Length: 185
Image 1: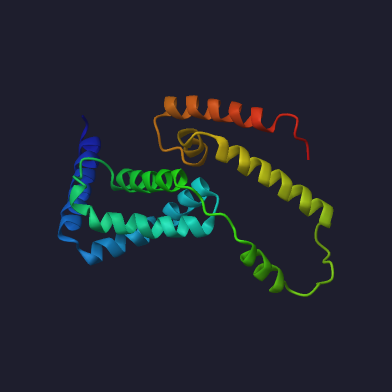
Image 2: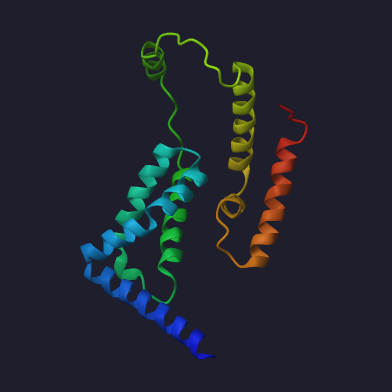
């Protein structure tokens, strides 16, 4: 191993070891730094898996709570981000397995009552174009949610070995094409 590679490996080992030691101590400064470093990527990852920002934000909070509660389990042998995304992924899978609550009629009535008064049309896209775009987006979202989690995750986040990414991406795209076949905008 050349000197640069050795330095890189040793540097990564010392960083992950320092994170592991800090999590075992429940170091608040370390946790703040980790949240700041990973917050945007983690939230985007969760939004893409759940397709719901509110649920993603809840899972984001829960992920960091798990990091705080179970920081002693991180051993520092692997990247911290791998451990973090594994926690987030498992929480998402658990959430998706639970039965989703139905929307009540009262909530729908309240939403209608709070509607804003009619606004004049803007110079933007026509209502028909907007509806068509939303329909396409809904079909793609529905097709994505129909994919198994590992394929959906691959489409969203490709931090896997290249061969795994290629095979999962190929299968996911084939499944998406099958779901969307015949559905024209």
